[in-house]
Image (cartoon, rainbow over all chains, first blue to last red):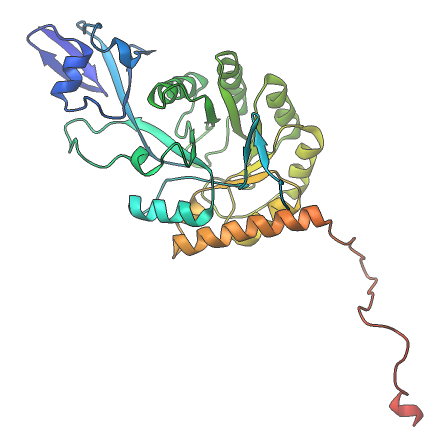
Length: 67
Length: 266
């Protein structure tokens, strides 16, 4: 069981999973997002390879209106 | 006026009006206002996605095709250099390596006045990391010069506080900045109506960036048109070169000779 913070909310997962699998669960696959893991950018091309670890802190961002 | 383009980081833009995408009623209004403004450089913000909410909600990027617009991700809401740098690295990833960005590091939430110490630190990191940095800053000419020396591609002083609509409060400082800086000086923040935009351009600013002045107008799309015309009018007046002011010394527009005989002499 691993516990991961996603945009400030804790989620727990029974099985190990990759970032790509997480995004699929969140229905964010193929959406225009960017992702930071523990303060470091994760390039889109690495979503499949990178496995989440217990205690990871993720930020998932989108573009919104702003000045 | 042909080929009077705005050049930023080597790229040429026909419009000298830059607009934001915040505070609109919906994306349709955002799109209509941007269209009416004629702007080519469009600011966007970077925020956490709404986890668990409608995954099919429309995305701002869908109405801003990169073929038509140059997107300018900002760091609005960041109060430290570190957060601003992280935000823009996320933006670069989100926008497929896009490096032109708007840096703003704020000092406090009441004034939204820039924290220039953090701004300078962030600018150094971003320039070293390959970003092309357009930087929101105070109207301090020395700071402006330092930001240019660091390698920022445009200096963007406030005219008055963000979202205040107070207009150009210190034209003299803007002039001091333009006297010292080679890169484009773009007024960012404080414009309230079209005459403010015109004044900024008449002073010789290279452009004007605004959001609230359009989005918070009663009719945003009409105000976007007004701002387009204001910027164009101000730019034309600057290029035309205004007549000198003659304080306490009137000068008639019509001939002073050939007047009919004054009545008292008839």
